[in-house]
Length: 266
Image (tube, rainbow, N blue to C red; front, side, top):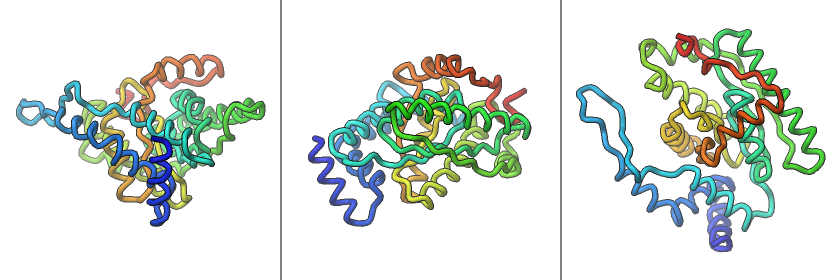
């Protein structure tokens, strides 16, 4: 299977696609189409009038399994590690994700979170992110994974409030949150494409409070729009969330008690 994937990647790569985009397309066509079809078949909309909630049965897509397939293909066929432009919501959530992925990817962490209120809180979270990455890189000098780069985006809370107009009273986990996911991932996809990265992804799926299916759907749509491969994930799987708590304790990370925006503090 690894040789077949490698040959397919080479064919797509020759047409000008990035390594990550070509590999993801090839794997999806050869190993993921049937699962995706089952996932769509498993979707049912809630019958209550005016409710936009989608109820999923047992046939939903397993995004951790999709990630496992990509990593397996990389281990089998790729001579060089691909580059990953990873959006991070905070240091605690990124702790496990970086530990997990840095063996397979050359990672640049993109800290772009205009949703965070107030600026003092934003600066505190940025500092923790940089401190964690510095610690990981220091440990990495002994051979545990590739060096990690950090790129800080602009702090532009006005972009978040513009997106949230009319959605101020939505409950946590609803349409306002979906718009926030899209805002941050769109910037990540655009910057990742500009930087010629192979993949883009986010740490958001590690949270038990975040809708991993919706995040992956947004990521896949942006992947097609910007021409950069989306790295599917559900990082809470395989005890990822539990591991992030352990790593946060080990490194003494600041764990905030709200997601970030002013509405999540209510």
